[in-house]
Image 1: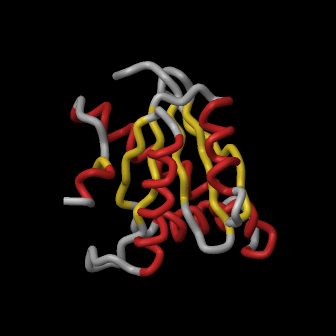
Image 2 (image 1 turned 135 degrees about the vertical axis):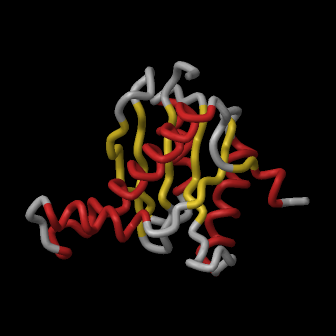
Length: 152
């Protein structure tokens, strides 16, 4: 397993959740929830730099059949923009049901939907990150797909 922090991003039309791993990729934790606005890429680039990340995973919100949606296209655009403005590798990770799983975890910890609204996106990003790390540990391969694979 490669050493270095990884960052995961759960893109949403209103909020974007961000999670970070430890250098040894043992733990991941929610880092931030950012508003989806014109400053988003700058804010994400700053977090990537501050955390000295070796890789960024952007959640790819496919529908249950595996097809693209409006959100998929928006997440791809964000990933492409980040790949242009940072030297860190940006990979896309299938994130179907990550937000629902995060909501379920927060609910079972005693938080209702209203209390956890601002936490859900960062918690979903943490689940995306955990999935990517588990894949790399199990297979020795980098998880997800590179941006270029979607441009072919």
